[in-house]
Image (cartoon, rainbow, N blue to C red):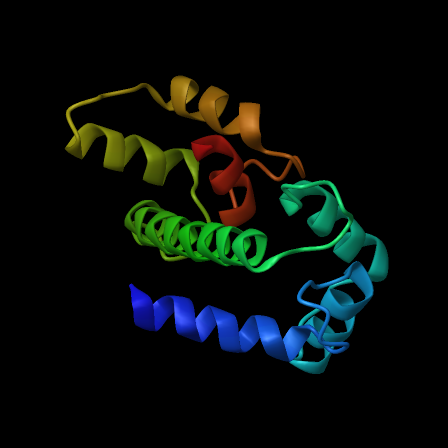
Length: 143
């Protein structure tokens, strides 16, 4: 745990360009961009507002660690969802979940559904109306 905190502290200090012990939205924006990330200035401001525990408009080290831990957990959750998605889409291998692949997997899991039920389930989360679920739609369905 101590090693992890030291790593976060090093990254924090790198982001804290002016050395004042906090990370401003501007500093967050610049550093994320310099590392190849895509974070607009307004998004950086939103991140800071959401993660700022003392309301000073900047991230302290504890705020930064909580933010990084949350990001790490989210990445792990996305990876788990990708594995689950593969289980459904591999039936047909088209990179999406079709009513047929949903029906097969649910049947294997002991939750038999008719084709119409599967189409209805997909339609509820099918944001682009193509009749299948891509990964982003699946992610919304599972949240």
